[in-house]
Length: 532
Image 1: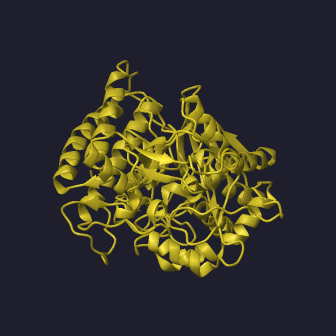
Image 2: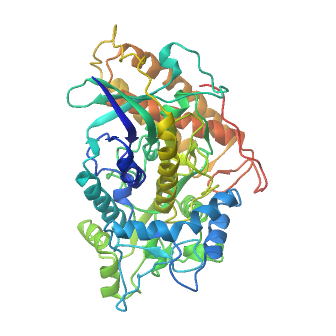
Image 3: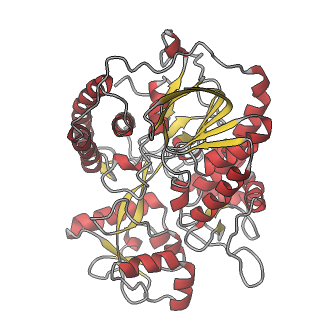
C-alpha cells in the first residue's frame, strides 16, 4: 500500500503528539506508533516537568543548574533558549487539559530534584507522564486531521538511496521522503510518502539488560538515521537512573522517582549507613551521574546487589499522598515504604545523545526533524538534569512545527520511490537466533559499557558486537521482515554507536566514566564514528 501525507510522525510520546497537534491545521498528519499509542516513555515519567514558574526561581538559576548538571558540555545558547521558552510551553500544556498538583492556596505544588537549586518541577502525584500522555492523546484523537496507525513499525527512512543514488555520510544533501512501515497485524509493508517527517521514537534503554524503559525503547529512530547516513552524536552519554526498585525478575525495572529524594528520602548502604556525603556535598540530591556512580561503587565495595532508599523518617500520610503508585507497587512486593527501606539499584534510563539537530529540531537530512529522547539538541550535554526531558520535547517540537509549517509550501512528494522489495526472502523459523543475540547484546553492553568503563572493556564489547552485527545482517537480508529482527538490528547499531563514541572520548565526563582517564574538562565533542 502507498500513502501520501503532509506530515509523518514516528512516535506517540510527548514529542510526537505535541508536534502533531501544532501542524495538524496545516496539512494531513499520520502518526505511526509500534504498539498502542499510549505506550511510550512519556507514559512512565514519574517525576515531572521542570520550568520556572515563581520567584525566587529564575531563568538564570535554571540555566546554571542545567549547565552544571551537563558537566559544561551543554550548548549554552540552546540551554538559554529552552529554559526561557519553558513557561509558555507549560502554559500551553495546561491549556490542552493537563492537570498538575496544586497547593491549598492554588499555586502549583513544585518539587525539587537532584541538581536543581530551586523548587521548579511540576508534577501530577507520581504519574506525571501518564497525565500528560493521556491529555495529549485525547486531543489528538479528537482532531479530524490526524490519523494514528497503531501497531505499525517504521523500518527505514526513504532517501535518495532508494532511487538508486549513492548516499555517503559526508553528503551534504540528503533528503527524506517518508518511510517504509510494517503493519504488524497484516505483515504488509506500506510506503508512506511525506513532505515532512518528524522522528519522535524515544530512547534505547533495552540495549542494556536492566532498564526502566518500556519494551518499545529499542533505538529505532537513531538507528534509522544512522543507516540513512545522518549525523548522530554524544551516544556515549547514557544516563543510568540511580534508583530503580531492585527486583531481578521484573523487566522493565520499576522506577523510584528522584522526586522521592527531593521529598527527603536518603540513600543508605545495605548495612544502614548514609554514604552520599562521601561523594558529593549535595548528598542524595547530587546529579544522577554522581549518584549512580556512588551507588555502583558502594555495591562493588560491599559485594551487595543493591543499596537502600530510606523514607521511614518522613510524614506517612504526606509520603503516601505524594507517591501513591510507588507506595502501592512496593506494597505489592512486600515492602511498606513507611516502615521498610526500599532496595534500589541503578538502571539504564535515558539516552542523552542521539540524532544531531539544530535549534529548529532539524536533522542533517533535509525535511527530517527529530525531537524528544531520540534527538541530541545540545540541552543535556554530558548528563541530563532531572525533569528537563519532557520540557525539551515540548520546546523542540514547537520549534520544529514552526519551521516545518513555513517550509511546507516548497516541499513536494517523491513519487519515484519504489515499494518494498521482499523478493528472495523467507520466513525465519528459528526465533532463537534473534532472542539469543538480543540477550548477548544486552549482556555485552551491561558488563562492558555500563556506568563505569575501561578501554579494554570497550574494545572487547566492540569485538563481540561486530560478530553479532555480521550474523544479524545476514539473517536480516534473507528473512521476511519482522519487528523482532528489526529491533535487534537497531539495538546493535545503537550499541555500536555508544561504544565507538565512548572510545573516541578520551576523558571521563558526565555520564561517561572511563577508569583509564583522569577526570578532565574542555574536550570538544567527538565526530561521527566510521561505518560498522
